[in-house]
Image (cartoon, rainbow, N blue to C red; front, side, top):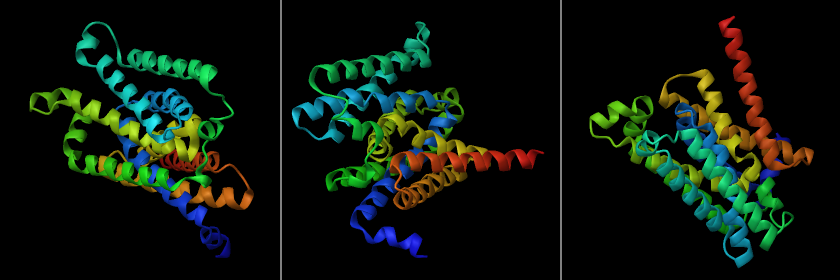
Length: 274
């Protein structure tokens, strides 16, 4: 029992837990729509395209979270425009649109880093630094989680229908393309939260792995949302405990814990089929 409770007597661990749960639940819930719509590449793209905003914010002495968010919103809007139905009719597929924006923004970040920053200065964001989360960043992450959950709760039926059948949704007056753009902006908020928890390199795992785990256990949307959020939260708690006692990097340990849950669910699913 002491092994479980002793870490939370430290203020930095309580702040890390609050930040990790906020980002984990937001990413877990949004990840269900990402996995359901087969948009896993978007999570990878959004996590890496925070780099230009991070570099500029650090060089100008601005909030790194604000810089990362601005960069991700630009990415989200760029993907939304390039992957719209008009663009697809002109020969631009969704994956191509994501690839163009992803590589372009990441290359811009590399160029800016070479000119005005350094990889060492940004290493804590590339790899995550949950145990030293600032109060301002924690507040942002909590607000981002509340925003994500509130929007999904308010528009759940529309998002669910557009995810199942966007053509039918358009026919009954639900503008699926606008919902797609909104979903991308929400992913931008969740990814920026995840950057503080597990870093740029591993944020896509926080977005995809809990949702993929839930998808192995159920095919219904509402149970999948609960399972994904619970899996993400459990990975955060378990990862923080293990990283504290074994002196391991917190972000990577959280992702490994989420991967362990996925493998457990996958093995269980295989045994059930057998």
